[in-house]
Image (cartoon, rainbow, N blue to C red; front, side, top):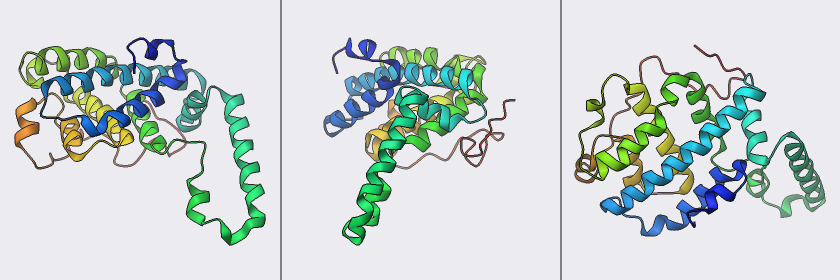
Length: 231
């Protein structure tokens, strides 16, 4: 994706475009290459910008129902969402006379939501639950790219109390959501789980890290509960 393309796209299309571009590049991305890690974290910075824009839309329109608000954002507004749903309903109705000729899994796969929508909605919900920590995400990503990866800087624990474990976990959630949506391999998911720990940990350690979710983080999806409870 040319550098300027992200900024010329409508805001609601930027997240999905980044996923498409990263998916297309996935076959040649190598987590052991410093340049590739730098490029991917720079793309995560843009992904975070898009996700924070989605958070602003959700918080200002329908905080009580973040999933519906996020879908409206991704589809370009409530009117576009209604139009897409009507088109989908008409399409499925037109297929009904065919009956068993259309496999059930084909019909169930047709949706106005992207395949990674649930994970994206969950990440947005976590950002909204922790607004102060979410505000530090962009700065954390800048440090991760420029200092920790680019200059072999210290681990995230050396950043001080302003960058608590919750901020690191939110960045890790952001990276994992983006990588899974883009179909990147297990080595990149370990890179996401090891956010801020350093390249040596990711490259040398072939095992998955334990879940470092804070003790007060929800065990189940908040995005699916219908209401978002802010602290």
